[in-house]
Image (cartoon, rainbow, N blue to C red; front, side, top):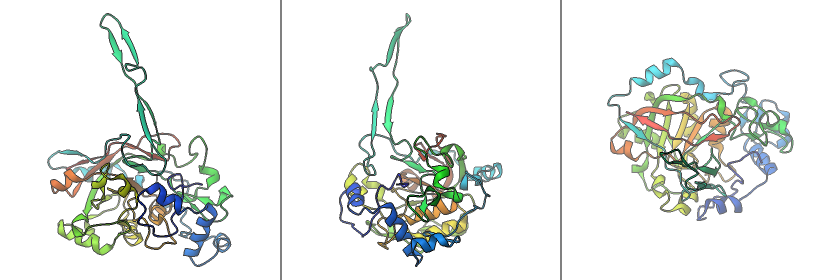
Amino acid sequence: MIFSKFESLPKTADVESPDRRNFMRTAAVGAGAVAAAGAAMTGGSVQEAKADSHMTPIGEKWWPSRWGEGDQAGASNWMTPEKTLDAVKWIKNGKVTRIGRDYEPSIPFFGPRGFALRIPGAPTGGPFGENMLVYNDEYLATEIGQVGTQFDGLGHIGAIVGSATDKADHRYYNGFTGAEVEGAYGLQKIGMEHVKPFFTRGHLIDVKPQKAWDVGDEITPAHVDTALAAQGMSLDDIKEGDAVFFNTGWGDLWIKNNDRFNSGVPGIGMDVAKILVDKGICLAGADTWPVEVVPNPDPKKAFVVHNELITRNGIYIHENLIFDELIADGAYQFVYVFAPLPIKGGTGSIGNPIAIT
């Protein structure tokens, strides 16, 4: 399947499953069923969706992008010298806050992913010279773009618009086909090497105080308005090229209760996603593993916000972030800084995002 992150997709709202892997496995559907379900969302068959060049299982044809045919950078195109100078104005006290988590074997993983670090030899080499120098290297085995605090690239998510077996019907950001993108040894298009480093204004929307959020709870526009008002902010603060983040409190389960953390999440739905698209943001992030609500309130749909942001609009997603220090400081607006690893052909990136206030 093309969904490297989503080995299987939910058919029903199974919110009682204690394990994200089992939740996905027991609700699995094939790639062909995904295409059929997507077509059902638009009220037609897969064949009808394919026949109509202006309609796909995730809505109207989305290419070429606003940045032109052939663009591979997506919403990171908002990162211009002018945007940098605008963002710098938000730095008042110079405090740098890390908003990424530690990478370690005990973190919650999506499905069978893993993280293993070894120091071969311990020490790896030496001693050398009269000073008896020794050194250590690490060997790391992991899905380097899709574990822990993870940044989803444009080649991570696509949609099947016709035949699941025809790569010409696998479509990604800017309409790139599976035949153009997919490769066993790295993406041939829209890989991580095309993403521009981020230095932009960030807005944190803390919905945690509003309720005890649970699996499958959707963050609505009303929740967003309430949170912003409590923080002395409004949607008008969000400008083109800004980054927007959501704190649900779900991150409090990190390592403490991985089964519950993995069982599903509260998160944004399509109503909020479309607002973010209209605002022209560059990136959405959260303290959860998908940012969006899982399972989707509509059992026929799965990870539709990923398709809306990444596939249709080239907007990046940053997952499993931590905002505790920012919230303690009352710092809901800051400069977001992140340089994804330029792994040629990569689908995403680990890394250490920071907030500067």
